[in-house]
Length: 231
Image (cartoon, rainbow, N blue to C red):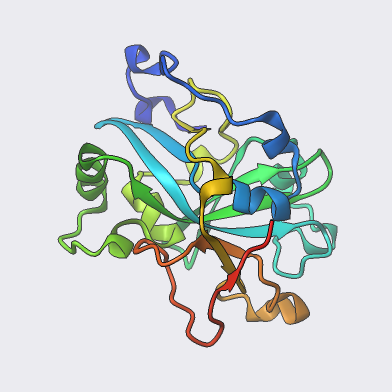
């Protein structure tokens, strides 16, 4: 959880009056099911500069001990991966390359490690964008440069490892999820996950999901063009 020194004021911790919870079934689902269902949903960050709301645009599924792309492959249970073995609804945040944080939504039942990596988001309003740019400290106006990528979105929302274990289904958290778009109305495509060549036969699995032709999508994979996602 975020440290007390980084938490917003007590007055800002009151539940949002219009809070629309996501169904418990989403957090209890396996990552492969939850990953496309998280598209279009709202990620809320209660920060020191104000509340920031963003829409989830791109995700990747990492599910089960059989997934060679997962940190928990083979039942690997360490201090870092322990959070993945808990009940769904918590944040799994880790650092890559010693400088970029990645935000995951833990899903599934206890002892079945499932996680959905959030790869891209977009600000919901101009004010959300202004606050994200303030935190991101960039001049580029390209949407993908702001929050199109796991590390970029964490910088734009000021998310670090102190959020590891944060409850994402509780509206008093400094980081939480709420219902957004009807996923059935979204044009979703899928393709292989990014930068997991080490996952052998699992590297080609079409377990990356994103909104078709959206400018915030993190990677335009020309080698593996996106395919329609059939529900």
